[in-house]
Image (cartoon, rainbow, N blue to C red; front, top):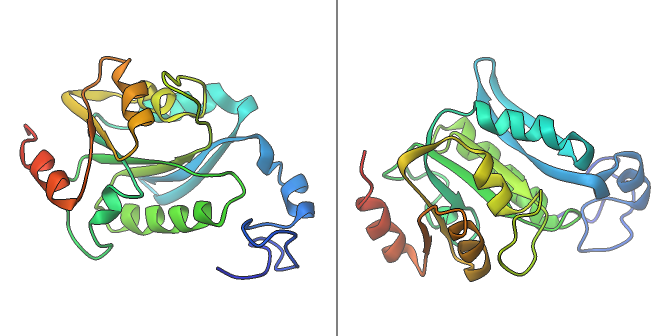
Length: 191
């Protein structure tokens, strides 16, 4: 990760953040609810919603076609190499990351590539996490609740708290342990 601000290329105040104080303030990054990439008729589009745009974010998520698998990115979907074609394509990825973290930029870049190559149909970063059940806007469970899900849809993650929170929505939720477990889980998908 670069030592300069992601936006203005000036000096960052903290090495583990991707932006300088001025850009954080001017771009209102602290109030971001979710951000990500979707595949539209006009190509791959980046979207970002503030907490004040919650209803717009929810409306956008409801426009996505029916989803079969909702997956965490880190430690789950990225077990598939970026150049690899996973066995399931009807996938939306959601990643919890820090709003100001370098991991956010890495996740967004990974998601953009996967949406462009068609291995996922959309991918988003969310920024809220609390003890389960965590259903607050900006959490993974809130995100999953907004999607149109296939009758056989399920959620996969490598974090117990996210799995427990999504399970409270009566959506099958599976804790993934490793790549072998992920492949076995996906091979059982009913198409």
